[in-house]
Length: 109
Image (cartoon, rainbow, N blue to C red; front, side, top):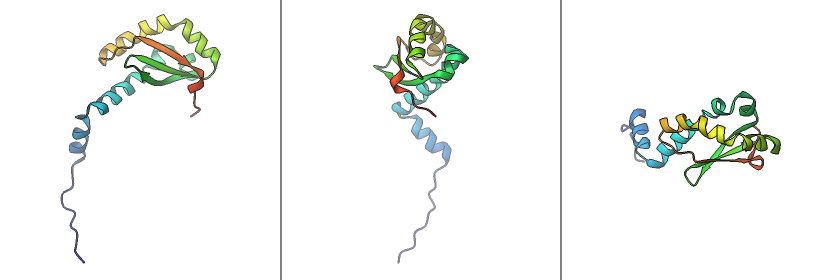
């Protein structure tokens, strides 16, 4: 039986650096960071009843809403939300052109 020696371990910094070179990883992390700002943009009341779900076509953010009523309220405030999102999106070099609100996408944590 041949003995296996494990001597070529990679440093975690090297692994993370390699992952960060991949464009899809960078994009996912950037979008994840953008989603963290939803509470500041929507306000506490709406942040509890809605959350970012995904990005479609690169610039449309889909927001999952707890109820259709929340989706309707947010739809009425869409222009204001887009204006509030602008500085956060620009700081991450992301364009958010539209928001889509969908009560069917809500999943309880």
